[in-house]
Image (cartoon, rainbow, N blue to C red):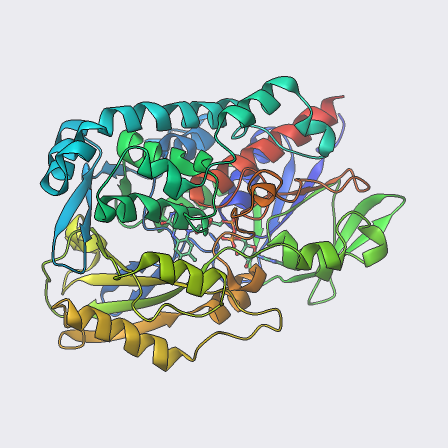
Length: 494
Ligand SMILES: Cc1cc2nc3c(=O)[nH]c(=O)nc-3n(C[C@H](O)[C@H](O)[C@H](O)COP(=O)(O)OP(=O)(O)OC[C@H]3O[C@@H](n4cnc5c(N)ncnc54)[C@H](O)[C@@H]3O)c2cc1C
């Protein structure tokens, strides 16, 4: 009997775990090498005393994507994690004190919009119809495929699909065709940040995010969203995947046009037949591969990618329960200026929009002694020299002050806190300039032409994760892991 092919995955984030499960289930002897002591990458738990926080994803959409990874490998997803739908999911609060909820129940959503503007509410069904079309185009042409070379863009259905997806209109303009109240437009425009981009520049194609949340629904995972990553690890272990944590891969050796081995920081050689890079390809390709081995991905090309936004996060453990919704957004006075500060001037907004996620509102057991408040503002990525735009104390102060002005005094009941800033994200995950989602999608070129999932000259190396196709965000990287694994299996069978 022929020996099983060996797959080596560099990075144990969601994308790597997704690929590992699929490959192992397809008969590959799979090993995951992860530099950190935890698996799951950006999706992991932080504990401050008895308070449990999600470090990364707070908003889960497309739950079927996570479930299918297990279902396709013969496992029952319910044994690994359970999703809770939150119909009335986000409270949007504006500087004039007015507010409305986002709901994935259309009737309730129209009532909420009507509180601010009847005419906008009346257009909501037409908006939903339009974003549904955008979603179906992406689902058909983009989500379930890899892009390995220019040839992959040349299919006629794909080109027609892309043209129909409003690539030349920006998201803000798209929203203004349906909604008239500035507050409503601000709330919808925030969807651009889900892919780390600006609504004034990102193609209207990404209006599909509205469909995911407002039709598909917003979910929370019982016990914390990090349970998805934990469930993936348990499933992978059950199938026989080998995990090696605290194993930093520092080199990939190419011989006769193929990678044969990777070298770890402990100078160990790990051999394989096929390799997947889950670490951010924009930082790890130049680190692991000699420039002569990557003529299509030069340092110059990598430095030309516009980074997506980063985040400044405070995890704030409270000794009490506060009047907050599970997802709660306090909008700044001038979001347009905030986006221009971040993207054009690489600086923090001085009146930033503040997002709070308090998962203890849905799941009090994970934080029994008071609320677990995750506070996030959009942050400029690190500059090319790796420097942050502002020191931590200054940003922290700006956030607490902004909340105080809205009547939320978090310092009073604070029992412990932890800060996550762009430098930490860069250092801990080797993330390109500390970004959340790799390259931004601001320019049409970057939105549709992300770095390919492979290099033309090394056929046994595949890329997964937020910097490649289909893009960043937890469901997308999980899909990317499945797509790459499927391609590997198909290519091997040829
Ligand atoms: C604060 C924050 C909030 C977010 N909010 C949301 C949200 O609400 N909803 C959502 O869907 N998404 C959200 N995201 C994005 C989401 O977390 C990511 O898109 C997703 O988790 C990325 O998974 P990944 O596998 O691509 O990368 P990672 O999670 O970065 O995994 C890559 C792994 O590779 C490892 N690695 C890298 N290089 C090497 C090497 N050379 N050797 C060994 N190991 C290596 C890294 O340590 C890392 O563990 C958020 C992210 C953050 C940080």
